[in-house]
Length: 225
Ligand SMILES: [Zn+2]
Image 1 (tube, rainbow, N blue to C red):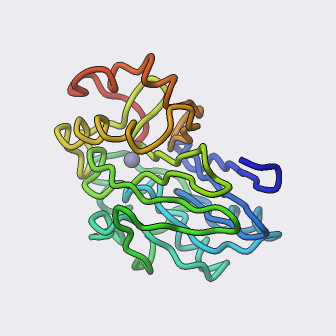
Image 2: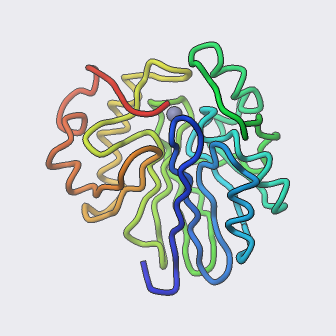
Image 3: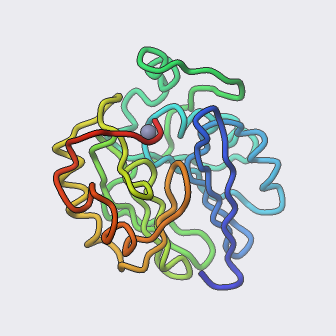
C-alpha cells in the first residue's frame, strides 16, 4: 500500500468484528460495519465514503450498515446470493446466537449485488470481488488491485490459523473446502489478509501453517460468527 493510501480499523460489536475503511485520494471503501455505524461515520467525516460492502450476511458484519449509509449517503453492496434475506440479519442470527449489544440494526435493501469478477474502485485503488462460499452461501473476498495491490479483505473465510465456522446460517463444509482450495490462487502469496475477526496475517504464512489450507477443513471449528 503506498504512502498516500490509508487503512483504518474499527473493532465493533460483541463479537469484536474488524470493520475496515480503505482510504485513497480522499474517498474510502468501508468493509463489514457490523455495528456502531454512526460512530464509524463520525470517524470518517474527513473523507467521502464512496461504498460500503459486507463480505457476508451475518449480523456482526452488516448491522452497522443502516446507520453508516444513512449518515453518509453511500451505496452498499453484498454478494448477490447473500443479499437474500440480509434485511433480516438480526432476527435470523437471534435464532442461533445469543445476540446482544446496542448499536445494531438490520441493513436496508442492498444497492449493489456483487458477483465474482466485479471491481470496486476507490481513489487509486480497486478491489476485485472473488466468490468465497462456505462460511455463508454468498460470501465474498475482496482482493486489492491498483494502489491496494497486496492486501485482501477475507471476512470470515480465513483467519490466522483457522477458517470460518460452517455450522451457522448458510454454512457448507464442502463449499468451504472448495473455496480454500481456490483462494490461494486468487492472490500473490505475500498478500496481507485482513480478517473479519482477530489479527491480520499473510497468505504465505497461512499456506505454511494453517491446517485448514493443508487438508480437508471438516473438523473442529472456531472463529467469529
Ligand atoms: Zn460470519
